[in-house]
Length: 322
Image (tube, rainbow, N blue to C red):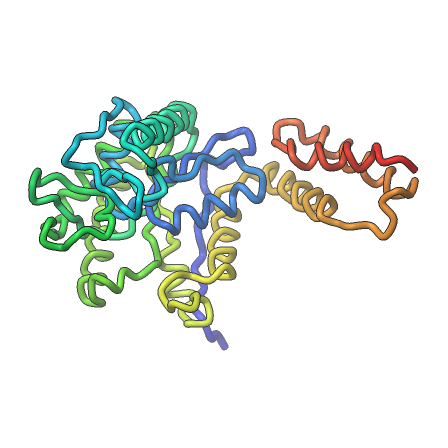
């Protein structure tokens, strides 16, 4: 007797290895997955320009990463004693317009390098609703709590979403993994949220059918809504998936996407991380020094994986006077 509809994710033909570089862009769920990948020591760049919810804003951000961007006066907003730009999340800010410009250029340069180096770009779409600045009719990435009268809210069509995905693909040489965020945008209203998600899902399906060699869909949306399907897998706001749900989705991703070799390496990585986190009763003992040296030797065997902080700690602990 079955009591849940577990989703089986097909194994990828082109598996991910630890040597691959990954770029994550899109909604806050993209950051959740990026954080999980980083904790398992994968080489990930996460949301250089901040959280982006719709495909148009993601395409615009990638174009700015590729071609550069100079802030325009009409896009700069004074917010809580600092300055932000409508094209960027509020995490990109400055205490002056000059500082804001510097912060933007730093984030775009980080994104440009990540785009050029990426073997895989994970793009998570959150909504097909966009906000356009009335003064310019341009899509904004973030309204920065400005009065609603300054914006016009519109819903992208399936064709428009597909066009933005084509732009995204054209701006990177990497493979593209598309996911649909399971986070419900309740500010849009439940009916508008459902319509938005449906438009994005159809656009992704059409796009992946056109580009089977470069584009893939991962069903994070379906895993949370159709497999877990329980409010215990959401946070206190009942909207964002809980850490347990994110971990479940990430493990499904690892099972489908990683090579057998990468999975074996990941087990060693997790063992080392757990060992480094261990706090001994007597850090000055010969036994603990031997333990530290063993972990350093294991890290050395996994040479392509970045254990910079862990190595520094183990080296320091191994040199404590006995």
